[in-house]
Amino acid sequence: MSSELFKISKQFRGIYNDIDGGFSNMMQYDKNMWFASYSAIDMLDKLTPEYFNETRLKVKFPNKLDKLKEFVFGLDDEDNPVFMIAHLKQKTSK
View (cartoon, rainbow, N blue to C red):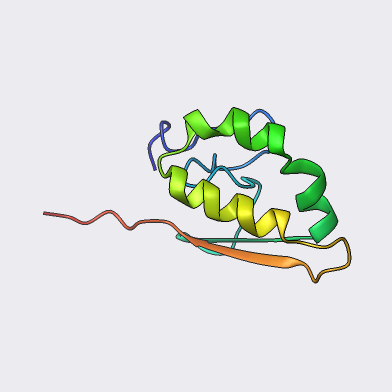
């Protein structure tokens, strides 16, 4: 993985999530898979309207940011934790 792909977010540690602007701190499961679990309260506390406004210009897919924003704003404090799994792209040899 190039150093450009391994960006560090100022607010959250880990691989910088430039896809939808959500959390970036995920634990590595194996070479290509990362995972994390977040409580609804954590998501509501950190993924605020201000956060989404600041993040909008930094993401590759603003429509995914909008879907995440809609999901977060639909959460209730007592909802179950959200479990995320990310699969990194595998480099193909030519």
